[in-house]
Amino acid sequence: MSARIVAFLNFKGGVGKTSNVVNLGAALAIEGRGRVLVVDIDPQCNATYWLLRPRDFGGFTNTGRLLSDVQRTTYQIYQDAIDRTDHFPGERAIFKSVPRTDTGIELIPRLDLLPASMDLLETEFGVNEDNVARVRTSLRDALRPLESSYDYILIDCPPNIYHVTQTAVVAAHHILIPYNPDFLSLSGARILCRQLNKMEDAFAPLRPERTGRQVCGFVINRYMMVGNAYSTAIAELSSQIDVLKQHGYVHPGCRVLEPAIRQDIKVAESTSEHCPVLVHAPDSIGSEDYRQLASSFVVHLDSLL
Image (cartoon, rainbow, N blue to C red; front, top):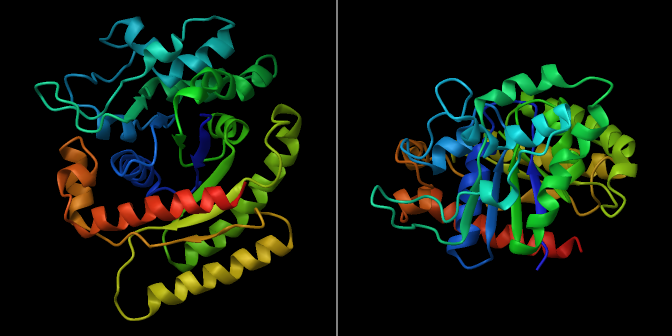
């Protein structure tokens, strides 16, 4: 077993990156599609907050917490690269079988988490010309020993394309773009794919075993069956993907994954319950959509081989 590493990336905020990573990861694990590791590299720590209860997650910051707690987060991966240290504990940093009940019962035994720390806010300021090369490959190098233990590694990226996000581009086999079906998102998607295309070319020497364009699909979020505005926006995105393929900016197999994830209050509720919607409300439309998306996701990735 060698994991397929997928980065969920968009420089636009509020498009559903974390929701896709947490709930798709849960659906893959629950539906028996494989063992999944969620990797949180966003300083907002939303995936971490979503999957860990407050007693397990105290903020993982240098303020009021032990340094050993910070070392158990993705922040330490980058800090090691910046400082030339070796404090990240590797597999021992992973929270296994998340989430859990207050009494410690495992709710999704095949879903694991490598958490983030709010200290990631400091990482960008620590990158300079002397350490940028080490930083760019740091996530790739940290994940390599873990790949044999998982079928899928899903990376929740910050809403930007700065240094930390660039490490996900270097580490990932594929990139999925979470997308809200509206005009502003369409124009942003064109720009993002062009920028990622430039990054892939620049970083090619750092990822010789990962050939071809990485952007392989779009996941539609917050879909509502009201009028034809949303279906029209998805059709426009599909047309734009064809144009991006013609220019070589995305993978030849890139497409809109189905189904679109419908707007569902149960998904929002599940964040405060610190569990994916498939655990919080298994009969909800959100759970239904993510189960179907998990099937579509597996078939799509297999088609790219």
